[in-house]
Length: 93
Image 1 (cartoon, rainbow, N blue to C red):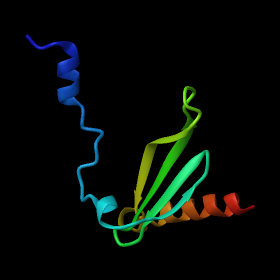
Image 2 (cartoon, helix red, strand yellow):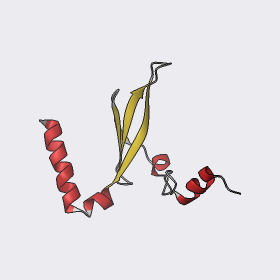
Image 3 (cartoon, rainbow, N blue to C red):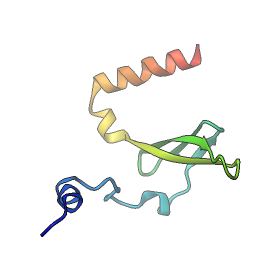
Image 4 (cartoon, rainbow, N blue to C red):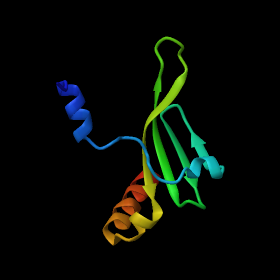
């Protein structure tokens, strides 16, 4: 008999990336602060944004919870481009 946790894990999609391992094939343009790390992979057309957090035991800043934006997907949506441009205008102000 299957346990409930086994059934749930079988019905949920994996949270792991299944595409091309672009981060192993090229070096990114990278900006790192104690709050965020942004990595741009121009050949792959990917932008990674990772949230930073301070480990309470070691006091080191760690990065996790990463979002990857794909230029080809974002570029196919004028609405998404407009929203990102609006965000960047406000970030510069």
